[in-house]
Image 1: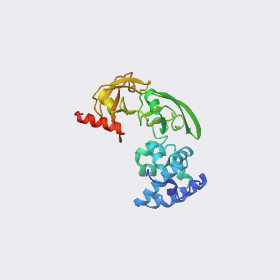
Image 2 (image 1 turned 90 degrees about the horizontal axis):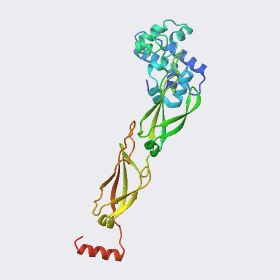
Image 3 (image 1 turned 45 degrees about the horizontal axis):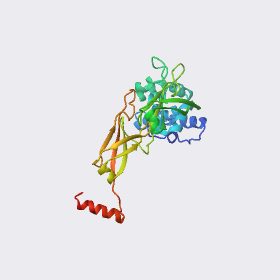
Image 4 (image 1 turned 135 degrees about the vertical axis):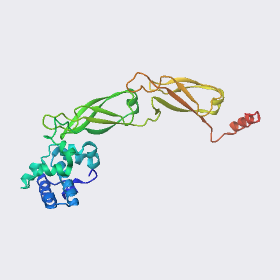
Length: 297
């Protein structure tokens, strides 16, 4: 039920108190309990949804994550096992004067969900992994950097300095061990995955480990050749453009690209040549072009 609004399932508001959430759950759970609706599949499905919603909204940490990231974002971080971990299904229904809680849980949710609950597995369960996005500049992605990120964990704001490796690409994930959701008693915390978003650069375009820079030269320079400065990550470099170069030709600067992730090898930089053709000519330029045309150019 990953796209279902837990608040709507229980018929409460986001601002409702813990007591109001509990009262709403108890009322609906009694109404849709399988023992009161034998053989009714729709009631059983409703009962499943109620318990899943209550398992999240009755847990302050899970509720905070749900409120922060919404239903879709929450379910990217929490599996059904995570949702029901530490949820005392049997105790909840004993408090309501209804027995058979654990048996009902096992019957309607199956062994997989039950296996994720603390007390029904062989060892401590790691806390849920979390994800967050962070923007970095094109040059920081290419050359590496250190970045301070801020995030909330267990309702507490934390700051952490993270090393961005040179060559990281857009969409890459950096694992930060132990900074995810808290585990149960004696259980390790989950991990935080930092998703990298590389901002576009006004000069460079990346193609794997290579860089592409476009430079426009006058028509006369294309005919006669020219020397010009081109930008690289390490500063400007002068190149020679040969006479007669054609539009779209790329001139290679070996080793001036991006360091490949996990390696010392660098890609290349390619200068893509564009030829500027003037949109308008003055009288003198027009006479010269006409003269060139008469000479077969």
